[in-house]
Length: 142
Image: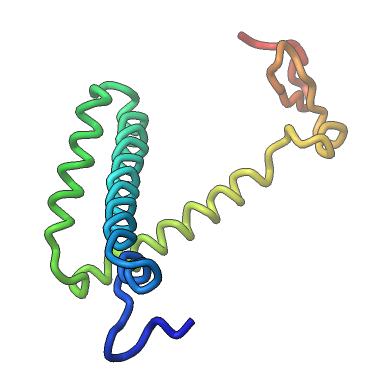
């Protein structure tokens, strides 16, 4: 459509709305984008507050967990440049990679897979899986 140029770059959806339909569309797009931003921040605070609450095993009030996360966001949101925090992003990538590999490795030798039942003498009892090796009792333990 040729709306973007070096002299007059498009910086937001409001600029695009202004060039297509006029001033009223710019205002509408800017208002809608502001509402979207507020809702996105709310969803992020609520979901990470829930994760924090689960991490502390519900020993801390859920509202306080959301407040702690929001205050941490306010604190880290004041950073003007992220150059000094490049190491933090690098560590985050390595932690994600490590957790992925641990999940794969930990889930692999699980004897509850259907192919392993015959090979490892696995029995189901009261909804629990019990590995019954040589010389072990085959009944369930509570």
